[in-house]
Image (tube, rainbow, N blue to C red):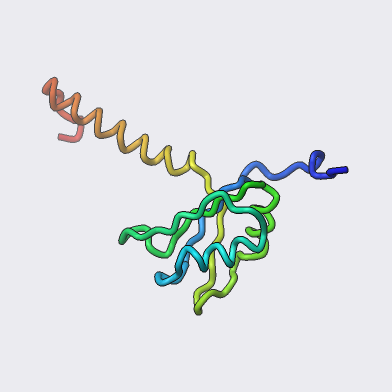
Length: 120
């Protein structure tokens, strides 16, 4: 009998983890070795651009495996760096991006129709 059915998880818990403070030289293979101990992984994406180095997304097949990894790897020391593990919350990221996009669209409309900002 699977007793996981009746477990209520906090709303922020999901299958996707966002990991920060990774060593820049860590390889995807090393990531799979570390995070794969806690369950089947669907995908790992290690940041390689200047603004995403030291970060990664780790997506598990099962939410309970993600929760276990989150609990065990928070503050885990890898190559002298302590991991920061967060549940990925896409709505926080997309809200910021959507707001910036809306502000840009508003600026374009104002300039197209010759409307000055109040603070001009």
